[in-house]
Image (cartoon, rainbow, N blue to C red; front, side, top):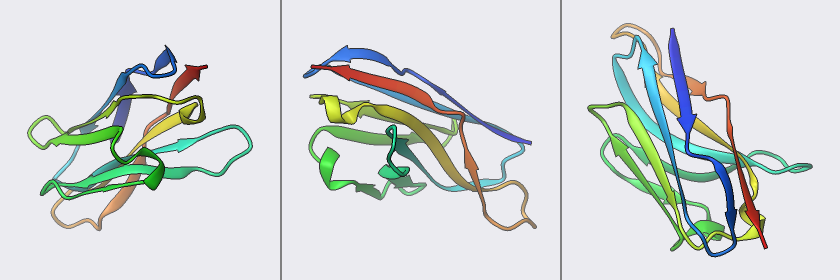
Length: 121
């Protein structure tokens, strides 16, 4: 059983910073990549940032230059440093992992329960 547990959400004023973390636990053979997605009320879930196990990153245009994603393969943890936050960053942020639970299993997609980020103007 694989679990993704997020932490670090909260309320911050515009221009402030928050750091989100997500730890994967359970039976995990290998991690292909991890990432963060977000969903604001009335909107579809969208990609924020992803990172492979080798450290290759991808960011949504709206967060480039403000957010930084990092991964600790040994700790099976992904973090998202969010700086210069804007009210439009307000959303529930979800951690995602593409991983292989065992050597003989296919790569599977897992999601955390989500953490609320609210940016006040």
